[in-house]
Length: 430
Image (cartoon, rainbow, N blue to C red):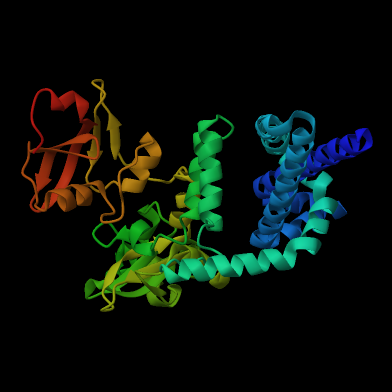
């Protein structure tokens, strides 16, 4: 009898150790960083390759671990109950339940999962042979169980595709950077640059282009001396040429090509044929994503494109620098024209030109104004108010108070923005 008690107690302890491994492996394998795993695999760690293969079929792995964990937990509880019935009679059921609850919660749940969460890569590599053995033993049962679960959920209209609960790679990267920023491991500038890079596939060239009303261009029919003077006075290296109307773009001239042409004619501007110097304009749709446009710029080795709408009408122009600035922020050089778009006032308010892009304002002031329906701050006010406000009108939305300072015809040219809490006590929302 004593031998049977010892064997049963030993079996219970072995099963609890197995439960420890099952629980820890499940937590470690689901918490492991795929990026860190890839780094370890490239460094030559063979166990990292095993873990990568197992994690690739996560549902099968987790199902196999759960099957094994439940088997050992149920078996250990049954053996403990049998042992305590022998020792204490009918009261043994109560003692066995109490003891197994304490042992399983501490040693088979909290302890292994806490350890796995604190060192997911190290723990996963350590238990990788055990995990592979479990998948070999229970993998088929796990696949069958998953199939049954999917069938039952499908009856209720729930479709469990492989990617249903998985974040996209962009969302995962963005979330990771945001968390690291809140924890102080990533500075704001680096967070903004990463966010700008991830946003390229969501933004269109119309979001960053220079609108035709602000586009600097040259009349190709002007006298050559005037054309040359205007190009050399411009702070830009490349300028569009038009004929008849400013929307009829017939070429793009590069200042360096113009200088070469001037050198060839002994600096006599009157002998310059500007259309021979200019290159053919490149027209792109306003719905092109920044990711595609950046790739096109790099592929064509170009730096400027004319943006047109669905009717072929010129909307503006976009440059390679415009797209790069979406990633790294404003790039200024000694020839840039300083534009006073945002001014911080002493009272804490901000005076903003209506043409300032919402994204630039958010990045500069760490705000979170939506830019889905409007590109500029004036466009946001018009969209939210559904009207073109008069001067001195004030509106509150998105936690900010917008006061119209200046309007020219149908354009809002200057707005004062301050936190809404300062105004709520003094005046109601309009």
